[in-house]
Image (cartoon, rainbow over all chains, first blue to last red; front, side, top):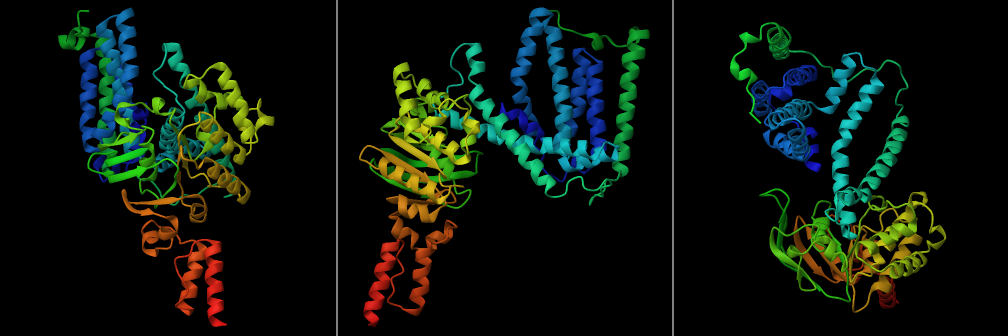
Length: 259
Length: 275
């Protein structure tokens, strides 16, 4: 459960991916997601996935990314079963692949972009400061809440709570003693943070200056260019070739499992 | 009895948090556990109720190996009150909050009702019985958390930082409670940074530093040893600091004092000698 948070726990590293402008990384994540949403065939999705692997390797975040995939395992299993049951196993596999593509795209973003830089990028993209700030705060508190969840679980287990006890309905209810303290303490903290922000004159001036500035460098332009080409190519294949000239596509493109 | 046998623990391979812990806690003792931030205190106590299992070595609680036992099974024997009461309160009413642990451990309905009433009374919370725990003040929430763990009547009780953010009156009440818990059947383990409180509350003090036990003995002896306190990043008790200042002027003044009585005695001796 807590493993899924690993995907969003930023760690500063001196890698190519970390050195990119957050806007570039954001564009890459969105592009990969869009491409992932365009196709529902196993091989194309696998190709999208494989094209992302080098970036994960460049970011030296393989282990964290892998942990996040483990966290996804329950959801993936659920999708696999439901889809196999109602549609087909082949469709279930491609849905899970799509899920993995989306998760990888966004964990690549969150693993390599500092939350503050992301807020800065949002402001650069003319999003009001309050919204950008709220977003960076939300991301900032994910690890805090993950740690807190573990403490709360320990505290309730010490009082004899057994999460695995009972039927499926009972199992869901077993989480209530964990969920309520998380919600209550998050609300308490939100109020405290709001007060402490106000006491430090948050929002007192309309135009805010920032200490650090973002700028796009050559590597950013290079990546943006490559990504744009990839996006155009994928859109072209999905909406022009696949619809108008499907016979141009190789057979493996439509390959699926027979069941 | 609690026995730590050559216990080592690591969260990440190759990064030991606890090393070579050998420790025996006998009933009848109130034991203090102190050490710098990150020394491994909480990690150590989480081994006692099986929240963590040792990477090497073993922990025995009343001869039960914690490696083969779940935390829920150990909850009948070991009570654990966490630092922050807000991390455990969740129920609609105080009564339901206290009943939670009892129900988990399979007490009969009648017994649950009896104990709920008894422990709310004991901690002065009876008049709030039907209210929501979240409407209580900070001190009251802390007491409720204590009541909801104690109602199970565990033989071993672990209190993690119980004096944090408590005023003098609450500390005095806590001290009374600790004294009432001190009997031949019970073990109480107190994790704390509060030196002044530890002197008054504990019979035995253990110092953990960087994952290793560096001292184990009487609070008086340990708290008046500056070298140990330095390693555990603790300040000596004020009276010990006073004694050290006095000894600079009067070499015969003893430096191993920690309590008010000992200090008065030492000052009296000094005055008698000078008369």
